[in-house]
Image (tube, rainbow over all chains, first blue to last red; front, side, top):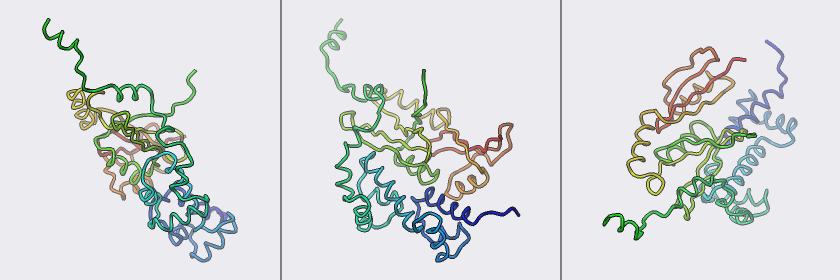
Length: 144
Length: 138
């Protein structure tokens, strides 16, 4: 079998964190992807990438949560679950540590998601067209 | 000159159901989810392949004022018959992706099969849209 540098397995675990952060993924599962015991994996991951796998996974989740706070109008609790975190309380705490703001304040510091959404003008025109109308012309048409 | 495709659209019967399917089962990421009161609560819902810029709009089939009820019914019927839109994805390893998606409950119409262009498998989204995932040959 060809020689595979040990860091290649660590990279696989890192890719897994990026791909599956929405799922209830944890460090033992990441360690499994690198074929290492959790303790050894954590040390090796930190040596290779400068942070622990726990930190890496958590910051990926928080980065994705921040994007969802900017681009959607979903609730904070919803977003917490959507990025694979279970507790809104610890989500708020970790988010504040990383971004210096609560999720709600972070969202409020950006233009509302609806103003950022690039909804094509043809759709805007189609959906904004008034629905119920009673123009006099309609009546005139009928009595012609 | 046109320089980039940014957004494509698929009709879906139920946006929540579609969102769950496209994110939880297919592994796409949610990009936009905004409801616009001025547009009759139009919901702009987009997802995309992580790392790729093209967004897929999961579009509910609208009634008036966009389409009359008959048109809406016709579109819904076409989607349910598999005669509307389709999306075609690629992967590095179709067998692994096939097993992964199948394990999450995606119903495949065709198992990974050798084609002149590579190996691909076919499935549908809950609305009936045709989807394929291919491992293209170099």
